[in-house]
Image 1 (tube, rainbow, N blue to C red):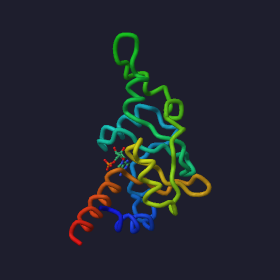
Image 2: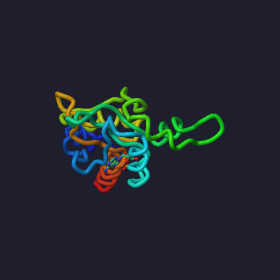
Image 3: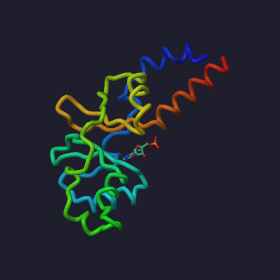
Length: 148
Ligand code: AMP
């Protein structure tokens, strides 16, 4: 059913689908976890990219990881979060995309992650591709193929 449209999707590139870096909330790897938690709560996201001071991608930090870190023996100890840096807790082993990767490359990676970071040749952070953007395209293709 989506065969005709899938040809279009194969030529669609990550650079056409991504949210560019200036519109993406992020934290720096040297920031304390307390700051990262504030950013996550204020934006409403469950995770955001982590960058270094040269704007290069280093990993992803999530609310879950921060809450795990603040859990003491019997209760949450939020005062610990000011003493631990994002770098110590973030997940550095996440898949990334390049701007010239295709829609299908992004689709495969987004099966296991809510968003994928887009980076340049020197790890500079270019933006993210989200599940929402991919699903919007799939939905559009479905309706276009149905109306043919
Ligand atoms: P969505 O598919 O739009 O729900 O986005 C999936 C995830 O991507 C969100 O839960 C966030 O972790 C991340 N995300 C989406 N938009 C942004 C943004 N502008 N800044 C930072 N992270 C974002």
